[in-house]
Length: 255
Length: 306
Image (cartoon, helix red, strand yellow):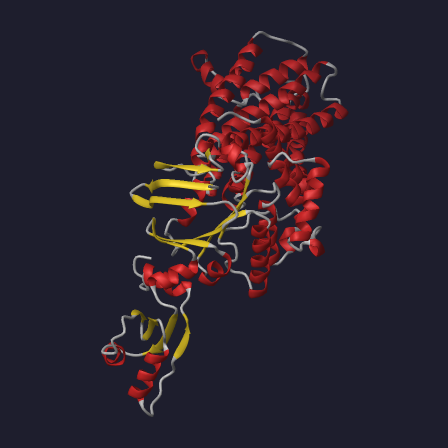
């Protein structure tokens, strides 16, 4: 069975309809999060740091926090929200009484997570631009990156969510996976400069590091060749995880 | 045939959920699947609309193999699940719109259908109120409306009236009869035998994953029991004195102290018991035998193993 795009869009529209009712409660906390980091760490801690990578510390943080906003937007969607729809709301059981198939559910949900990542990343980018922390027009190159980062974290979260049997396990995902990613993926400091040559490859394993490196290059108006590796990593890992999620979603929704 | 299920079996681990079931439901019929909890009713329904795959056997709906063309089949049927699946933050009208999109309905066609269903299931007064504020009966009517959004040829109802008050149950039965009258085929599961007897042209009684009896309700009653039931309390030793020796080839069903005896004509037994009791008269109930009697007779009255 292959994906039917109109049915996947119907799944997407279900979420969009629900979200249009609750966006005040959904968007505000997530939207303020990177703004708070920018204020506390960027301006607060930044006041004690002369320069970082040739810019103010707040300007150093800005591109990474765009990726964090996208990561959070996608991750909340494909973890708690997916779990609620799957287990409590039984939304997929209802969808599967219609011509919608498990593949369409997965495609629609990933598309929706990417949409939410884009809303969060995009809103935060606007804040940065108004603040003067996003050098235009070069920084506009992060706009196509935001959905890509959303895709990666949608795929990661989906593969996790479809396997777990209890909602409590998400705290592991956030504390042991997302938090370290957030802290060590080049957002706050250049990880590579703190690792000895033998351990550089460890940094390359961190999923968030790749979008952050692209975003930082965009903000600097540079296009180093390594960003092709980053794009390859994002697309490759997303594809692998989604192929796996496809089997998981079928097993979870049908038997 | 609208539904053709041929020797279908399904295991979950070591448990046999469905064990070689065959069913044939012709067009325009209301067909009831009856059985105790855990008999395999819901699994059978899920296999019919293609979300559970049988281990063996084949299922054709509208003559189409559901295993091969699930989308094609599900376009033409509607399913009301046992548990209402509604978007509680949205109104009934919005729920219908979202559900209509699952069937790729849109524009004026979808709007017209939503209006029709709001009228048909009498949702008008609260059509624009968030679902979470609606009563259980209202929510159930909406759940049924959702399964009708694509104007299905086959409607599948999994325990449509469980937990509803009598007025709502009667209203829903009337709607199901309307739909059947308009040519829709209906497949429902229930463990309310009065519901099955009122609605169904044909029923199949399932227990432990097998069909143990099948036919029109009235026919099942005459085949397995008798038209009349005499019901009274008595101990087992008394039973012999009261019923035996009358020369009646009567079916009996005992639940605790309660004994039910099924006969062609109940008055003979009633008179015999009156004579036996003399002054000290016990309460006798004489009534027509019903589907519940057949159900209890065939599936057993003990709760063990249920």
